[in-house]
Image (cartoon, rainbow, N blue to C red; front, side, top):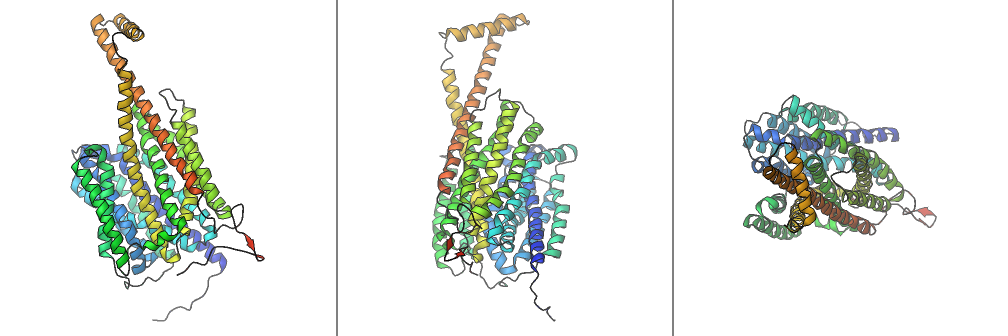
Length: 537
């Protein structure tokens, strides 16, 4: 069969192609992220449908998260074996087929199994897509490109809860999975028509089964330990076993990766200071992000009486601020490097969490809205330069690995953040409750007078004096319990603020080696501009 002669496309065609690739990747990422946020809303309905308790139905999320994290590093081998285009389309196919099967589930067990199939596609979709973006955009334009990608991707969690609530309430729970099918078909059609074919190594790179096995055990142990530690007890035999498996598996994994010819994770990638710092910052960023995503809906609904829909509407400006700030931060990163935007983003994010540490039962709508917008802007300025700096730090042959590892780090650290902060919330609430209840003594005259006034007021409404006294005590205990919970939330948000503040310190050690020009930019030397070193193959 005759091959077409190789021609170099004009610059305008390359520019157009880059943005078409970015559009396809955004659509694929949007679909995967949207599905996750929608499923969380549907969990109460799934509990009723399958007559399951929270521990059982939680595996619909946990099983997906485990498979999602474990499959991400495999994308490096997929890219080598199939090429980026084929790997991306295959990931889309798995995700669509998994979505269709989830919608057809007839019991809890089949739904969990089909979610794992869905996660096989989702786990490969994100790093493969990011790798395509980083390969078609030169280093000096990746900030803007990844900022636009982040803006598109963050729209999914903004509309996910509202859309999920509507579908579950007015259609049925199966529709939350079926909605992926038409979107996925469109993305596959665009990918097949537009993406250029790239050659992999045709399977010449051996798959590192031993490395994959021990890495999977490590991630499974960590995620199960973090997500179930609060329920099972942090010192229980089950949780200690999970962490023990993770520890020893990781140790063996490091040995295996040093010995095999084609490791699933080339450990030399961590020799780059920017990449290693980026992964550490990814941990801190995820802890700060997931703490607010997890805690704020609880505070608004359980303590302030907001409905789920009202909570989604109130939190939407945060996602919109994130959507608009990421491209801006990416553009600034291209011009002056990642260090300054990351420092600014870390400071604003830490400030927004500090604002949350001043929440009360009477916080105004304006105060809440201001905090949410500040959080969105801060995360936008933190996430875009962090992603750019970390992936740009990798060599060209490590692009898939870099994006996959960064996503894995954020997935595991997000689970860690939720687990730690939920445990801290419970303990601080118990602490503050104990502090309040120590003052509930007979010799506390102001308290006795307050109870007497409440009881007499209730008595005037028709209750007996004895019954009014009991009701007054119930109201008082409920009131004190609510304020103990408020103080606990304040403590946790303050701790999260301090953790994210570490980002500012760590960002100081980043090297700005690839911006166009600016404060931290290229330096003139010998009459020319020094740019990034040429990427190796």
